[in-house]
Amino acid sequence: MADWLFGEQCFVISAVMPTYARADVVFERGEGAYLFDSAGRRYLDFASGVAVTALGHAHPRLIAALTAQAHKVWHTSNLFRVAGQEQVAARLIGETFAETVFFCNSGAEAWECGLKVIRRHFHEGDQPGRYRVITAGGGFHGRTLAAISAARQEKLVKGFGPLLDGFDQVPFGDVDAVRAAITAETAAICVEPVQGEGGIHLPPAGYLRALRALADEFGLLLFFDEIQTGIGRTGPLFAYQREGVAPDVMCVAKGLGGGFPVGACLATERAAAAMTAGSHGSTFGGNPLAMAVAGAVLDVVLEPGFLARAAATGEVFGARLESLVGRHPTVFAEARGVGLMRGLKCRPANTAVIAALRQEGLLTAGAADNVVRLLPPLVIGETGIDEAMVILGRVAETLAGGEAAS
Ligand SMILES: *Cc1c(COP(=O)(O)O)cnc(C)c1O
Image: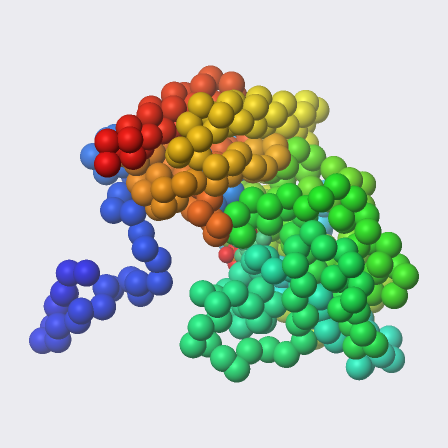
């Protein structure tokens, strides 16, 4: 970290708080699935800003929506009705189990709104002693104190205690462990339908359905974190729709704004009945700019055939990754995932694989469990997949060669 001067003072800490181990590259512009750095070098973007730029970069429909709104009004606060919120909420309700939506600016906030909906539901339902939420090991819900308390991974919580009380963690995919963890204080079960940050983990078939049945049996709310899986990442608009198992509460963010910060907490009327005026809020949440872009994202992804095409491309990608792993077993241990949410479990450190791929012009994202995440924009076609496979194959050869030589 270079020292820097401000007036007379010299600082060792970087001007941007060093909470990320950032790659030394600055992007100047993007176009579809490509990013261009300050030296003009082109990269194929299979990180998508961590599953955010669902329609790629500089999508003409998103630019049009954002600039049109920018000329009208940016921000009015939630002291007034916001037409865009009413439109996007109606759209989300029409496509999901939900009957009401709260808008915010990020994933963690959307998740935390879900937690507040749950606590308030039982408090106002004369069961204030029911506040605990069962969560899954390896889960991720964001970086607020409540969200790290729920995920309770060492690297997230170290040094940030005391944590928020009220979470009971069980292994992901284990229905019996959920049943065993239910007590008279349990209010809800919260999982990601497919774990993202945890390393692209798909639960066993029937898991979500079994959680729904347990929630119904014990009068609990079912809370899905679809911040990463939502907006077509796994095939349908939301991952829960793959199994046809609806939650009571769901949080969404990442892909919803296609790169503009926006989050949403969706709920049934019954779950959210206690969320009355003054119970929750956000100054920026659902502002006209965010709503204009989110509306345009939904317009595009809900066009007939769009999600089916992305899902089909995802299946092709999955098959190609399986074959890559078969050809390079010393570099890759496993291909995982569904739709356009894919992961490669590496044998060398995933950070080394990610750096090597970036050198060759392919951007990816890391995940726990030594996984490289491949999250192309939903607009990627088979030629984009072909291009990525060439780079993946070349890097695998090099890494395998390097191992054989050493
Ligand atoms: C990214 C993510 C979050 C946190 O979202 P932020 O916008 O970073 O707060 C929460 N849950 C899941 C599943 C995520 O992938």
